Image 1 (cartoon, helix red, strand yellow):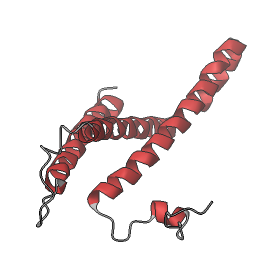
Image 2 (cartoon, rainbow, N blue to C red; image 1 turned 180 degrees about the vertical axis):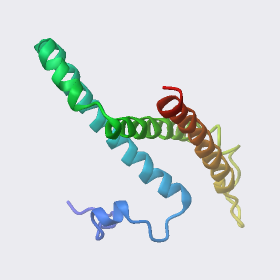
Image 3 (cartoon, helix red, strand yellow; image 1 turned 135 degrees about the horizontal axis):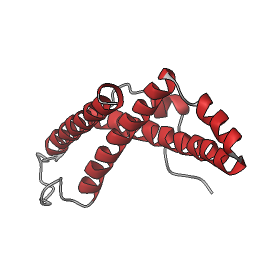
Length: 144
């Protein structure tokens, strides 16, 4: 059976590289990458936490491995990735449900698009994520 879709001639580079992409496509790629990073952190967290079942010595050894300034920065990066991923996910849900694109209109030339409305929402989502990440940074590094 032959597919009518266009072949992916760029491979992984087409998924990662931007080229003529718009702002929303970069957000899409960053959303995917933060999602993969959060899954990787979750798996690592499960392995480290499972050391608790092996006894107190194993737990202390695991905690010694994952403590220190490098892991504190890593935990903050996980928090910042979570902040972006959560806020951008809410933005995407609003767009998919139709709340952020406005009422449908007749497709009459010149075609009106909702790109401007979506772009303002994307910028607002980035600002909210940045505020949450900065607030978390205060808690991680200043108030701790």
